[in-house]
Length: 290
Image (tube, rainbow, N blue to C red; front, side, top):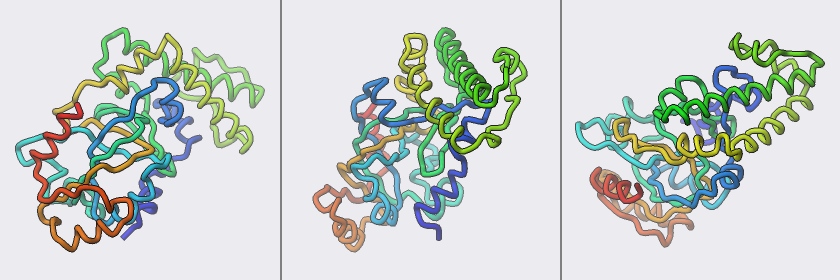
């Protein structure tokens, strides 16, 4: 069985430069300090599904630190199709990391999106939103905001074209490159110093664009003020600096020995542990969050 860290590294095989190199999907990196500076989002509650093993051995490493945790804020009720309560783990969740418990957490929001918004993971676990045409179209924004997000993606592409052109002493026509829908260069051809400068510049430029009057309101609706997507089961949050508030155990794990094991973890010693959690309990809690 893979360790939690090994699982993350295997699952997240893309590097920052590789993400930037994707013409179709210029990345919107979910940097926690950047998001806080731009949007000033207050800390938010979320319900985090987790295995007992990860709860005891991996989650304590995240508590209170600037490590991202992706979680959800809504579970779809009815029909026996809820993957978070299904006993058929092979068809719904990773069999090595089944959801056996829930942790009510509070943390700093570094990203908010639903299953219509395509996202991916960097090496080390950081998430980013992929600004490809489908993501933008499925976001169901009004036309003004949709146009703004499309223009934002193009401005990110233009930055890459301009910056790489300066680094390589090449002159590229940004409009023609965007019309061709393909970069006329490979970022792997840059040396490490150039790649580092590109990544830093991209991040700085992203924050500048996100903070501008031209895009800030559209981004608020795109990734902060989203409608509740009940039809798809959950709205996803990426949090960091999380702290647990309560632990809820599914019925088959509500045994004295499991409770004793959880209590032995210092970070959980004083937390309330709720037993025999039902789907309706989680739904009631997440409705309060909304």
